[in-house]
Image (tube, rainbow, N blue to C red):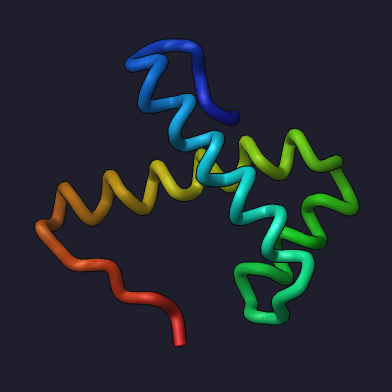
Length: 75
């Protein structure tokens, strides 16, 4: 589905900028999240991968806020 145009434009912009940095760095990494990003980038292109990462990060942030949890990176 991607990120809609509803909601706070500034927050959406920050999520996309952060995702752009993550996608750029993922090319040099080999952890599972970076592998997912690189495969997605090959299949769909860089811009769609950036929006997908922004969407995934937004969902992670929402779940953390909802459950009052700290971030637990996958090991």
